[in-house]
Image (cartoon, rainbow, N blue to C red; front, side, top):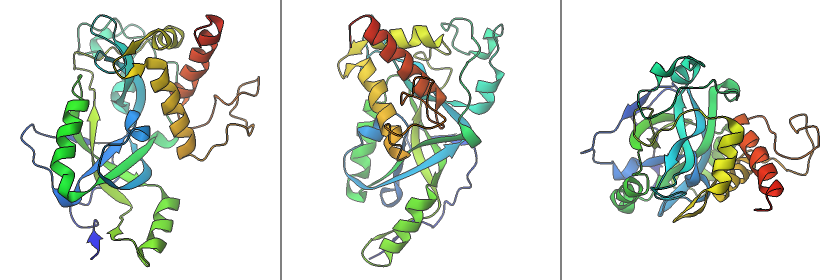
Amino acid sequence: MTIDLSTPPSPSASSSSTLVPDDYQVDPENYWVFGYGSLIYKPPPHTQLRVPGYITGYVRRFWQSSNDHRGTPEAPGRVVTLIEHSFWESLTTDDSSKIVNQNVPSATLDPHAAPPNGKTWGVAYKIQPEHARAVKEYLDYREKNGYTEHRVAFTTDSTFLQNHKKSTQSNSQITLPPVLTCHVYIGTPDNEAFVGPQNPEALAKHIVNSRGPSGENKEYLYNLHRSLQALHKLDPAVETDNHDKSGTEYYWPDDEHITDLVRLAKKYDQETNIY
């Protein structure tokens, strides 16, 4: 039997997302989850298919605090969230009114560029229908520290899509469309755990010095960086124009925010003999 995922809803690859109401009941046959942080390297249970691809209209930033995974209530760590591109663009050095959460200090201009073509890369997971509701409950709990559930258009990586179509003709049971509707957890700027922009050097030091029940905060950063490298099939040993002047592997073209934080965190790590 072939599961046809190209039936409605058929989203366009737009930047808008839809907030999922609290009483929303998932469609077990069509439950997809987009991972852009730890879900890339620590997937949800009961996945049927893992698909690389991207969403548009957002930037990925370490602007969300974590008091239950990579930090504590007394010393929260930092984890990624998605920032709508229009909000990100509006941030200026002297306009803190753009931050809805009044606990957030004055906004500072983000020194990191948006990803090329407005694409935020990650992974979409097709959840096994018989476990869809249980997985949603698991994710609701896992992402409880300030995150809300949304639906967003996800574009499948073209190479993966071509290869999947070939396999579908032989033994795959899932027909994969080029664009999917995915569930995604976002820490929006009005949630109490949102911390907003921070000097990259200070942020990197904060990440290195933080830890929580799920482990060291720097491990989260380094694992995410490695996972994104793998997603783009980048060999860290191969020097490219995107490397820094020393020839190290920290720079590559798709997420300047992550790669710069890795560079700064490892530098601080080594200087303080923590690493």
